[in-house]
Image (cartoon, rainbow, N blue to C red; front, side):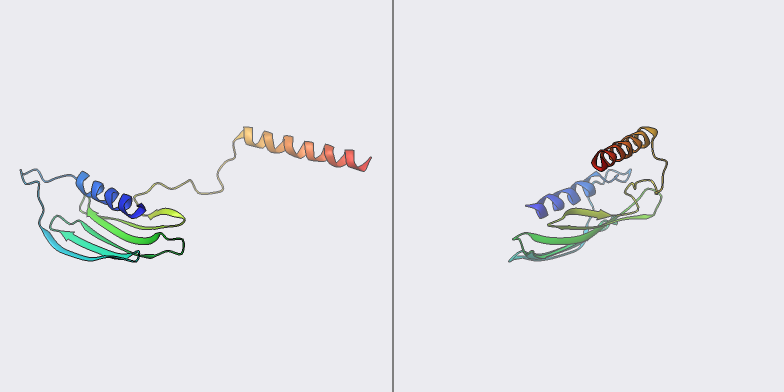
Amino acid sequence: MKTQIVFAALLAVAAALPRPDDDSQEAAILSDDRVQPEGGAYSVAFETENGIQVSESASAGEEGQSNSQGVFRFPLDNGEIAEVKWVANEFGFQPESSLLPVAPAFPHPIPEFVLEQIRFAEEQRRNADSDEDK
């Protein structure tokens, strides 16, 4: 089921790509290689003439799931090639790409309300320690 969702998401990304300005909405398939599912293992790879490339493979996981990994690439408007590598297993879907947003580098400024909570917790800890000493 997880694999079907991932594959559907990949197809949705490919379908959402900008189309050429001409009336052509179709892209010829240059290659299409598939190994049918057997015991949780499969593979699929295809490439289209408009620069879309998808590759995915899976093996049976220890908990009955398919552990899959893959990559998809597509051209951006500026001519660069976008690439997303991913793994889907018992730990969930884990994409990796320079296109994805990242959290700010640490250390970043800690908000004042967080610092106040830390000070309050330390004060309570000191009070509890001094009560135990009595």
